[in-house]
Image 1: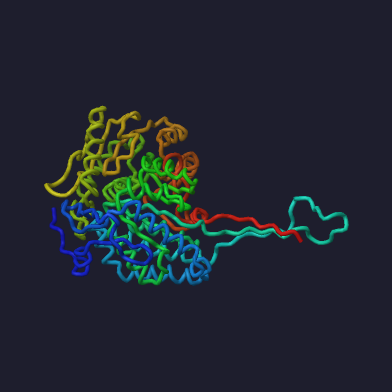
Image 2: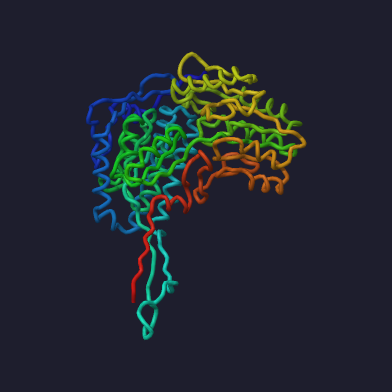
Length: 507
């Protein structure tokens, strides 16, 4: 395994200073003075530290966000000015792209090529998309109501003038996961700011560094104090305080379904609105007429991307029985050749898992698969003598009741299932839908009629046909069933951060 390249002097300076929190435009230590080590998952060594915030810090951040939301300079800011601020922040991300990519690769572990393309470039483009929405939040008018005219027989002209408004929902608590920290922070922050909300943003305790650097860029872009606040800390402390806070109007969360349930329970105090992008157990379905080379490469990419630590990871491979062995061997061949190493090495294709705890979790699932009768075709154990690396793993001989088939593993672990030559689309759809989740599905076939017919039967928020990993900000992203509530991206996302108000005027 390659040695990790040295980081730039600029990043070294950033890492050398304990990273404070951003509250009301000031960088401050936590009330407790406690800190959390930030580790490099490629080595397991500490590279920095962030503040361990608590409820007191959340209270201060919420108060700052509330004051900023009520202030006229933010609520009455011209939409074109909010557009300018978001666009300026996108430009600053572009200008600091390499630094942000290196920080993401260093702290999260993902290959730096992926960090550049998905996390950093994606964050800048997402901000530009939402910048356009600042000037397009609008209501409707109606000239005639069905409500009876109560003015009497001699009344003339219309009885009412009626219209609706879209208003910002208020203070948003945004809780961000550790797998795509920068991009997920922007996915919450972009639409919230475009709508005119203010935020308290909590990065994952494992990966706070790019979010804290983003805070510096937010200040440089010229956002007013208190509009964006960043509180670092543990999920069961800071995240819980945000979810339960009586002066937060909405929580936007990306993470595990288990944590999502806790947030829903905590949010009942003031019945705050909640949107959640949660887990997945996504099927990759390959028919006997598929372009085999592309399908095999796509299936491998769907499980190896970011070491399988993606909510949409294609962790269930459903293949026509005639092709099953060839497809599985093809995916295994790609996995064997995949270059494992530290994320900061440009040659790395598969970085480490994010933490020792996550690697232990993945290993426990693989052992559970063995115990329940699955066969390990490839991998199945940690890789290397330092860091949190994991071998790409393929399990065959699985059955629907097994934990490895039913539960989200969040690692480079693929389970395979053949489907019969005699299976019709309803049967294939039944197997694909036999999960508590419904985030993404992928279909590989040359028969587009079959593809569209199956896509209509799949219970998932996004279906890819003959391609892996195709996204666009204009398309809503989110899940069915236990994969979440609400949608990110697109016009639908803006509705998550606004309230509708109807106004009726008697004439």
